[in-house]
Image 1 (spheres, rainbow, N blue to C red):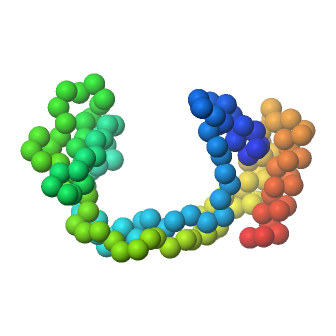
Image 2 (image 1 turned 120 degrees about the vertical axis):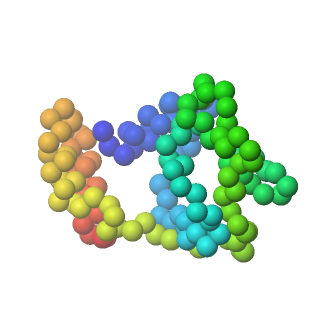
Length: 134
């Protein structure tokens, strides 16, 4: 599957149709919020989350599973932020060193036996373009 085909599948999977956009920059939310984050641990294990505002502060509660009756912690929720950041987050470009190496990408494409010739040609062009601009 090519990236345009993936976009098409994403659009068709939603009602109303989802808009997909390839972006060159994203907001750096992580670094913008990091100084204001409280040290919350083990929050990756539950499957259901609820965020709400209480006394002007955003809090979070969680449940292990959606059909559990009790939201935890049972008392007040976990306070996510200890302050409010100023302004807006800066824009950042994706870090290419975190992306798949073009050689690895070529090897992965070559291993896809059920890929059409048209898809292989699309990936060849995509990889060549990535090599030029990375």
